[in-house]
Length: 111
Image (cartoon, rainbow, N blue to C red; front, side):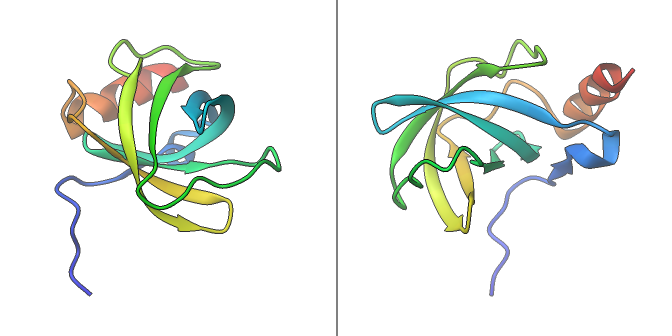
């Protein structure tokens, strides 16, 4: 299978981070956890017991719940894949941060 990602993924656990965020999907706000992130998308875990979004569904990553990154506010995405309680969010527009910029910001968050 071809790797379709344009960017390297950054696993938040590697920074000791367990970051929750608020997403808007299917007409409701939900809380999700960011498992990994890149400028082009993110793997999110929905562990609130609610329904999973459909493949191709549109949503918006509204903001971080327990962290603040200026470019992670109101990020529109499309659901690229679903696996159990996780789904891949493909951002409509790449984040205004490079992979190295994301890594530096996450390192700052980790303190």
